[in-house]
Length: 170
Image (cartoon, rainbow, N blue to C red; front, side):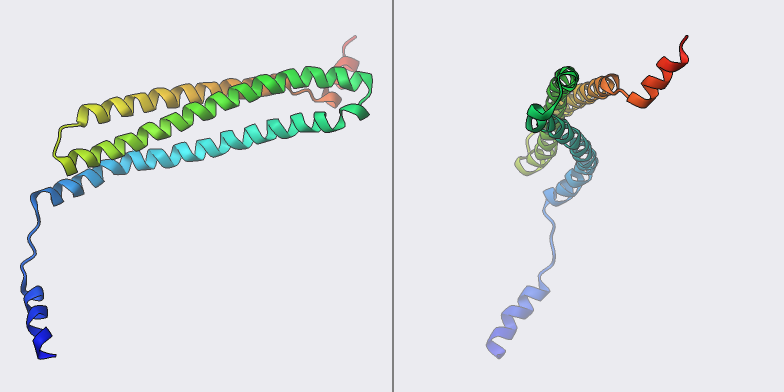
């Protein structure tokens, strides 16, 4: 045991020296925190968008599975609703694609910040461009998502309220 005590003591006596870039790495981690929180928010938005897309698909499948049992009037209404569902599906897909691209750009921002420190190369311009593109993609995704929501509210008809309105009009 005595033979191993000396090397162990030598390891414990070593002065901890921090290379110059350890503080740089710590700073890079600090800089990367905000984009990581942004990434979390984008992920939550993507979850909401994906759930809406799933509901659109489920509604379309309902018509597909029950088409033969629908009356002629119900089929006409179904065709009308299916056209809205198709437009909504396209918009939801675009919103998800733009949101996913925004998330990928944020990941590139974080990776660029770390590469800058690790490789000791100036990449802040690239990180800025990636962040700007990320914001543009996020804006496009949210605007497209908003358009899908507007389309969804236009296509909703509440039959009881509609019939009551018609009954009230002279």
